[in-house]
Image (cartoon, rainbow, N blue to C red; front, side, top):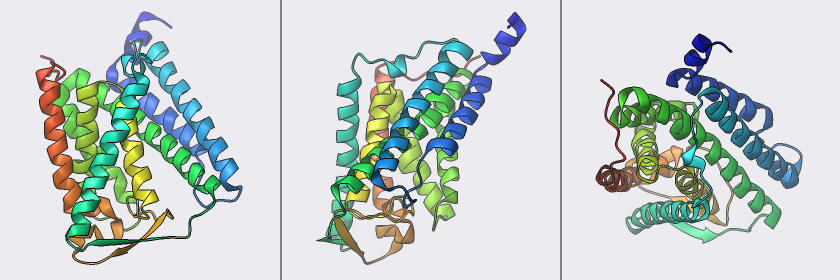
Length: 277
């Protein structure tokens, strides 16, 4: 590869788009579809293969094409950061559900549980999906845009894009997409800027979706079966309506508060990068 070609591929938006396309291709080829034939064992196998493929593609793009280090995947504090992210996700969803339940929006009853294999398969699938989305949105796109326009523009752009792609989900509306942009796009982006690794933000994302599923709450409009059955009552602004918890204003408010806290910590630590001049 000559110098001009190498410089072209090292331009942030070039390696970000290339990585985006390769990850989407891997996802299309390997990611299991919930409810498809093959059972829990096939879902676990495909999810694990997906995780390996996503990681290989990400490292290939960053190291060989972008020619940049990948401190966001450093294994030095991987376990601690992942657990911290999972704890943050559980706190976020637990608090949101508690507030909605107190105001009469949710009530739960124990459901006949699926086989243990199905529950495990669902958790592994959520881990794979969380890694896929975080590598695309926070790993590739946020970091690429940040190198050109700074942290604030990168955070705004990826948050809006994250909300927009969820318009394809069942029962999605412009309001639910706006809610996703704030409570998920902004929160997960702030989490990455604060911790500067994919372990924390992937753990947060995984715990978010997995806890919703185990509680029997729709995950971004997608029906799930978990350990509980949830009865929904009251206004859609409280419960999220047909879209599920993410359509509620409660996690939007809590997510915004968490994002402000994380961004303040990131700024104090010097993690916010200015726009290039």
